[in-house]
Length: 259
Image 1 (tube, rainbow, N blue to C red):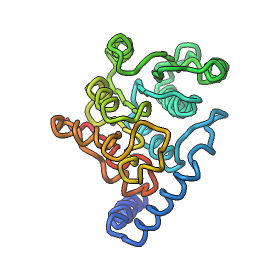
Image 2 (cartoon, one colour):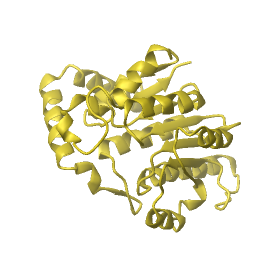
Image 3 (tube, rainbow, N blue to C red):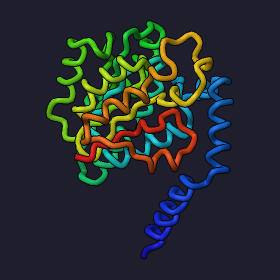
């Protein structure tokens, strides 16, 4: 084997070992509980925009985008826009790599790969900041409920004809809402791509962690994922990602379309 393949095999073995490392898993579980209470994920930015994510999940997202090379990414939940900017920046690098390989000229005002973001409310200061951001030409911002049939049709129109589609769900975290999002958007995901459902960790922590939220144990993204998977065998959780990250808000949430 080459040095690269040797290294990848070492990584594969380490990730597999993580799944059986009780001390490591106990330590990360305690960190997750303490850091959720401290709102640790609210402390980061991506290219100048706040991104309410753990750095480990950010790393996983960029790995998935680079590996899958989607033509379009659909995201529910915008907040400050950091996640949209993260996705758009990796798509920009993919377009640049394509241009280097083919000699194709890039048109910054009309990029090939795009991100569609949906939120029930895009606050004016966040919209203004995104309008001024260098990644703006790659962003399609849609205001409205992600489970409104009219909004779903608008999103589907953007995905139509795209060869590779990826979806990130991170809006209202109640069971019914996430399940409705999964039924609406997961079918758009192309084989070997992903639908990532964030904040499935709500099922794994005490209800008092979210005292002002309508979701909690038994009513959250993970319970929606479990119900969705019962009748959608074309998807399965990619546990390799979870075993690699250990620190993630999306246990059982990295859903890979396998057919």
